[in-house]
Image 1 (cartoon, rainbow, N blue to C red):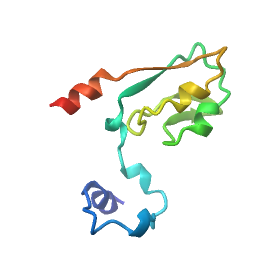
Image 2 (spheres, one colour):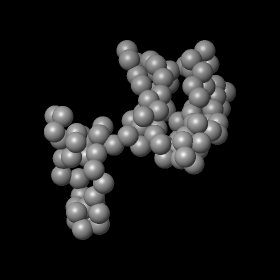
Image 3 (spheres, rainbow, N blue to C red):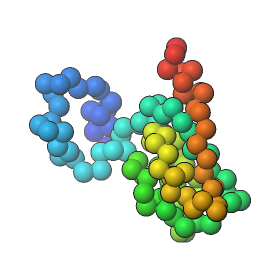
Image 4 (cartoon, rainbow, N blue to C red):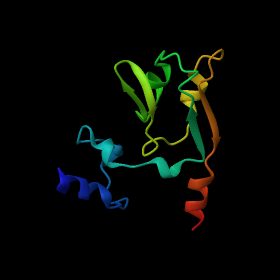
Amino acid sequence: MAEKEKDYEKLLDWKEQTLAGIIFDAGNSRFYHTGSWRTFLPVWDPDKCIHCLRCFYLCPDSAIIVEDAKVQGIDLTYCKGCGVCAHECPKKVQAIEMVLDTATIEAVKK
């Protein structure tokens, strides 16, 4: 598994990419840490959360951490800050709020 991980760490140029972006290795997304793309950061409030799991089912990055059918947090290694989780959180609850991710923005500037 470690060897396969190293393969995904290198950036491929356009000639090395798969035709039409086809994914041949199922489950390879865990090797792509995409959290550094983020501009906005989801902040989850466990005291407000009713564990409806809307955020979990609709997150395109599978960044919502769930154990025993309850949200436990957000894996910022994969979260791109799209805001789907906050948008889909019930309006009466609003357990997830999107805020500007200043740490990621500062890291990109360096």
